[in-house]
Image 1 (tube, rainbow, N blue to C red):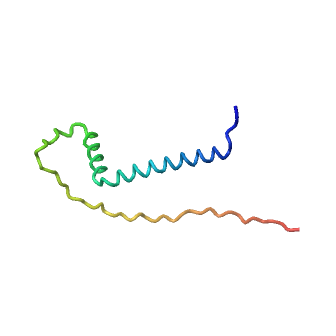
Image 2 (cartoon, one colour):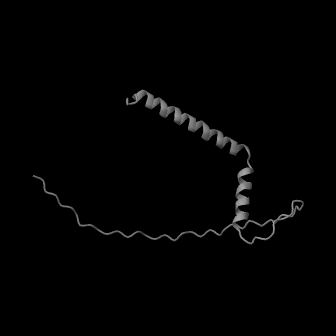
Image 3 (cartoon, rainbow, N blue to C red):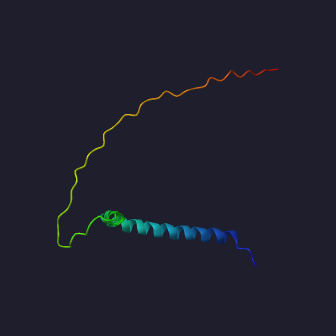
Length: 95
């Protein structure tokens, strides 16, 4: 069995990299083109994750629950001065 040529290995690796890069770019641009899609998916996942959340609303109802945003209170962290151990001086001799 013959060993593959180094040029073929480099070209194959480069072609695989380009193909994966193009695939990733296309998928990211498709997900970015629908701005509400990721929000809808995460909201649906949150609803499914809550057991006993109640019955799902009918398709014709437009009632929505709105909650007011409450900004968390900022607590400044307390400064603690670091503790240092003093090391004895290093004495070297020169000749």
